[in-house]
Each structure stands twice: as C-alpha cells, then as structure tokens.
Image (cartoon, rainbow, N blue to C red; front, side):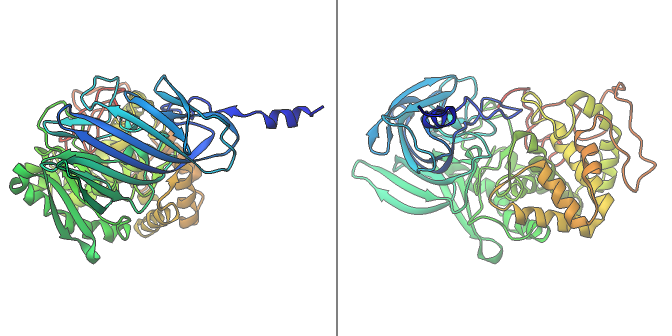
Length: 505
C-alpha cells in the first residue's frame, strides 16, 4: 500500500484560480510559468474582427491535470497541447485547458489556442482600442487577456513574437523589431516582430491602421521608430522629433536605454472614450492620444519623459505585484518633474523647483493617506490615483533628502541593474537602498510607504502637514487626494492626463 505522501504526489493537481495578488486576486494563474508567446493576429477588414492564434510555451512546476489561462471575450475555436487536441472550457475570465494526459512537472509544453475577437465588443473591461480602420491595444492593468489568452500578471514576464496580418492598404505593427515581411496573393501582408527582451503581458502593443513609419536615430545609434497616422504625420512631427533629445537626458540619469528600439504610436482615433489616459508605456512603442501631442513642448515634454522613463521603471524592471506600482509611477513622475524644472518650465501653479512642489504635496500627505491609503498599499479602486504618482514622488524625494544626491543616484542605477529585464518588489528597492547607502533604511522607508501619517521630511523641519480632516477647496499639490488619474495626470502633465473612474482597467 502506498504511503499517504506518495499517494498525494502521484495525483495531478489543478492550478488555483488566480495568483491571489492583493489588488487583483483572480488575475494570473498558479502551477506553471509562461516562457514565451508566439502570437498571430489576422485583421479582417470586412468584419472588423481579428482571427488570433496564440502559441504559449509553459513549464509546469508540478503535475497538473489541467491548467488555466486568463481569457475574456475571446471566442475559442480549438486548443492543442503539443500536437494533440485538448478539451477546454471558459468561465470567470479563465480558459481551462485539459489535455489527454497530465502536464508533467518541469516539462516544457506548447499550448496552441485558436480564437476570434471583436475589438468593438462590449466587455466589463477591455484592452482593445478600436479605430475607424483597425485597432490598437492598451492592456494595462488587467485587460491583456481580452486580446490574447495569457497568464495575465506582470510577475510572469515572457518572450514575445508577434505576427500581424492586414490588408495592404493598412499597416500592422507590434512591439520589438520587424524581422520578416510576407506579402500574400490575396492583397494582404504579414509582418513579424520579435521583442529581444522579456515583456509583461500588460505591455504588449499590436495595432492595425493607415499608419506611416518614421525612422530616425537616437543616442548611440539607437533605432527610433514612430508609427504615425498617415494623415497626421506632418502635424505630429514636432512632437516626435523631441524623443532623441529626451533620451539623452534620461540616459544621463538612468543609464543606457534598455531595449532594442523606442518609438511613439499616436493611435488613429479622436474618440473621447477611446481610452481613459493620455499615454501608455507599451514596450518599445508608447501609445498616445494624438491630440495631446499637438500641444507646445513645455506642455507635453514632461509627460513624454514620464512615459520614456517607464522603459526603465515598469518595462525593464516590472512590478512583481500590483502593490509595487508606485515604483513605476513614482519614478516616472519624479524624473518627469526633474525634466520639467531642468528645462525651466514652471508647473501649473508657477512653481519652478521640485522642492517647492514637494512642499505643497507634503502638506497634503495625511489627507492623501486618509483618502487613498499608504503609497504602497493600493486597492483595485485606487490603483492609479494620485498616491501612486505624487505620493511616490514624495517618497523618492524624502529618500534623496535623507541619503544625498550621490547615494540616491547610485541606488537608482544599482536597482535598475540588479533587476534588469525582470521583476522587483518594494522590499527589493528598500534592500537596495540600504545596501548602497550603507545604512538601514527599512524603518525609514516603511513609514513613508506604509504609514498612515506622513513622516518628518529630512532636512526640512519647517515643513508641516495639514490634518487629514482638513479639506480645502482645491489641493495645493498636483492632484486632489483620492482622484483617479492615469499616466502623468499628477505631476508631469498638470491635468493633461485623463481621469479614470475607480475600478476601471
């Protein structure tokens, strides 16, 4: 008779529904890692739908009778495990795959999912951005699985190859480098793109439309590729031409650009509800609303820096959990503000230094913590509100005041180097800060990140905090506490960002 332990080990288990992330508990899946995605999108102009094929390379960490992928709004036609058909079922934003035999622990396996999607479908949340002649993708934070089946959590980064097929009158683009162009006799063309480094599912970009590619060269020969609506190319050129100079500034602070290319995709739509943000850091190809990029440089430059800095904080080093989002947004706003003031552009209240700005943000610190919780403790409803942005900037400013500029710069570069192309937690950042500075910063940063009261600001004993119950008519900081914002609507764009409602993706 088998022992209880041996009997238990011999029975395949099932992956649990969701990773249990405190912000989105049902997002992601247990029991395996996704190593690579080979995605194919075939845009059908007559129906405005997309035929998709996702080949996902997975490696189970235990024997599984079935595994689950995140999927919503996808009409699944067939699933294969290896070269054999597999049973499948959809439920609760999940696609359950059951092969003829169990997935074996440690054995790399390919899953193939064939499906159809409608970018215009009404879903509880969506990563599709429909345009008059195609679509783009904006999957952050929890909607990549409306575009392709996946393990939709930033903690499971993978390699991506993306093929986009579109009528010859249109252009299909995606993240990474164009490696193959294949014309078809029926008047369509397939373009294949390869991302050199791993990518989180939320950062995938795929677009089809009447676009023109503008190529130029950045620092150290870095290829710059902008994908611009053909009819808007001339009017958007002044904004797009700013990127090379912005890269020089960013590299001086953060080190070499981490990816094979960079560029901007102003999506070809003016629909006010196309997406509820101004820019999104999809890896190597940042998504923008075109109207925003028509503004003067002093208005758009800080926000463009915000999105560019995400290439380091967010794309190269991605959050291990959604509660680590402040590392992305706080850093992007911090350097966006530094860029603003370095260029001599006052903010919306006439402030000309980061210190002046942070004094006002500091004054509202207790109110922000009361209304939105601590900086590193978001919920799904307030994930993208001002605490992750202005609150994150305030934490970084306090750290710089505590350790000094030189030590702060070393902390930043060491953190980026140690976690390059991977994931990092808030604890990882605290650990790096302590090791590089040579002092235990655990208690100091814990109070700033998790405390319900705003700690004293190092070097500024005269700074005061309004009581949390005080509610002046308008915040003196960049955004009123509790206001939902997205991508630069706090510090760097001074209201240019578009507000998100609580709980929206």
